[in-house]
Image 1 (cartoon, one colour):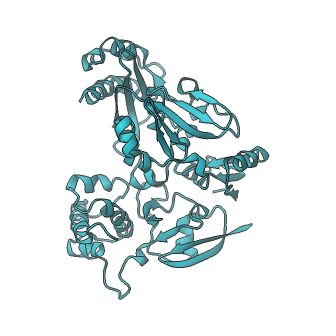
Image 2 (cartoon, rainbow over the protein chains, first blue to last red; image 1 turned 90 degrees about the vertical axis):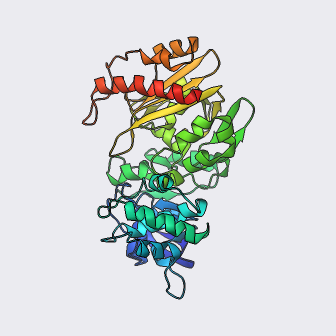
Image 3 (cartoon, rainbow over the protein chains, first blue to last red; image 1 turned 90 degrees about the horizontal axis):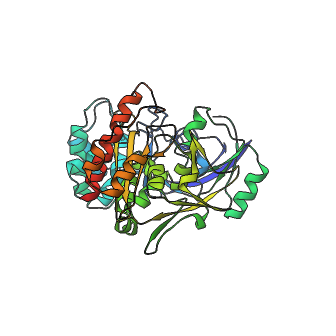
Length: 159
Length: 265
């Protein structure tokens, strides 16, 4: 039995007929075909599936899609500027070599966007704490921390 | 995950009446424990009754002697609340250390208490402060609420609506995090109500519990030295690949001492 779920994704209305047990990340990847949001661990630990729901970073593998009914969702596909140029946070990741394989990067960037809004000039310690729910297996975090500090400054508190 | 039917009632009354018709139905608060348990098929409810539209379960109200928090208050909301920070800073600080920031945007106070995970943080605050859990039917003292491993005094279908925390003179929470999962291996909440102290321990046993010997010592004198020499018995404490009962018993004393130090700062 399916149920209709509707939400706004990256500014556009999106809806799908899904089973109630469909996770938000499954809806995003398989129904909406937005595959920038990744599934790393599927157990709420790695944060690769992080998206913004009504402006707040959440793990899209940890809620069912129906919990996002009527919500505004932002995925990594909605982050770059309309002309295709990189968002300041994405540019900071590129500039500071904040990624190697890139698998965790969408989740890192989405979490960083939400974090940077309330921390326009964060300390290294604050950035490290903000990454508690995001795992990276390549970089050892140093360059990710640098990227987020630079990106946050460039954002000036605004996504 | 097994299939289920999803419902999003608009009022607490509708939620309670829905669940009464679905014996295998469960309330869904933030879902940060329940959805994971369902994915692992440790839980397979026939129906999920999503509480996210229930406005009467939200909000934070302070009067002089208590802070009342709606059951659907998200951890991030409590951690960031100016009112909670002012009245019971230890409670706001505790909420700010639950899980990670993404989890804190979804997880709720009521969900955490109803789930009663042996390593959850909120039960330590509820028991340590002697909170009152309000439900759709009655008020339950924290001392009578936590029954055992994932077990509470809640009856089938009973819904937590809010929790009232008495404001202590001072309080603090210290936890020793499991280095991998970051869950509390042992967490100790201490509260000083002026000559009457409460000490609640999470992570160490099947469910949160009070430590009578420490409470007695801290009620006489609220100082780190009062608890530093207390040797906790390991009997009945959790044993797993992360820590033995003896190690957890040792950590209780260390965390209690550090919590008292933090409360006095």
